[in-house]
Amino acid sequence: MPTVHLRTGRLALKRGLIRSANGCYMKKKVIFLDKTHPVLQETLDRAGYHCTDASSLSRSEVLEVMPDFEGLIVRSRIRIDRELMERSPKLEFIGRSGVGLEHIDLDCAEERGIAVLPSPEGSRNTVGEHTIGLLLCLLNNLARADREVRKGEWIREGNRGVELQGLCVGIIGYGNMGTAFARRLSGFGCRVLAYDKFKDSWGDAHAEEAAMETLFELADVVSLHIPYSPGNRYLANAAWINRFRKNIWLVNTSRGMVLNTADLVDGLQSGKIRGAALDVIEYEEMSFAHLDPERLPAPFQYLRQAPNVVLSPHIAGWSDRSEYGHALALAEKITASFAAES
View 1 (cartoon, rainbow, N blue to C red):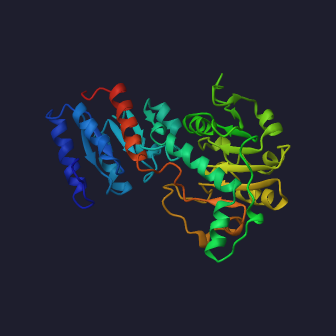
View 2: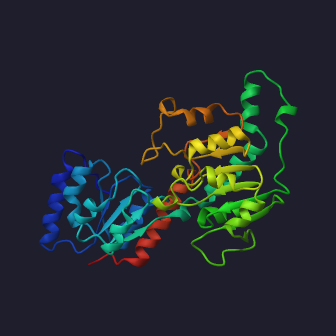
View 3: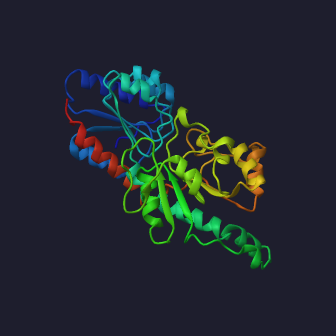
């Protein structure tokens, strides 16, 4: 993939536009705003697309060169909003190497007939495994016990675990991630209920289809696997937490903004939430790449010192295979739906 540098990128891309306007290029052009696994670019090259690396360009420079591209590949570095799409009259698809779409204006994309292609298939296995890991760590006090032993403390009775066998696990969101988690629960002897308001007949061999009211009544463990949207901001708030009949363990590997951290803390302090395992935090930046724990508000500071809380830095979808998986899934979707030549 040709590299476009900040100082020379604008000129190089403009030269490409001139050649294209003169009819020298018939290939559809795809611009990469972020680095991805090489297999994505390699597959698109072989399929006949013309790929350009703009991962070092600023937003203003990206806006200048967008009019000549039919395809756009992103992760989460730049917000794909109305302004950018209106600068892209040829744009046919936005390929998101990853899962979340909160940085893409989906309404504008629909208005303009631009397909938005995420690649959740690429990390569903690692998310499923990571969620299992968080849950076992939580139920068996593994993170706390590790810290204690490192400090020279040998506490056995205080770290007695809770068996997953016999518990009722409620999964909210039964898409790629929720189903991967359910499959991995199948050997633990627990009852698995799944709720998904966007699907019909979602029950399978790994989870029973259930109404949310059933989860409120029966769940011992609740695991969130839903994408973020303005409609589910703070879905898990105080009122929601208190609707569960039992005191619950709560796991979130979806998006931080679906869970109100202050209300979570209240639930932990009251005992309504027996423990929480969080891979995502509502205070994360759009790119999820930076978070300074020392500067975060009081609710997060409570989580940092709470003995019944397990935290990880938004890595549930990161494994030695996930980037390749995202790239391969996205390449397959693009080549299956969009011709390489115009």
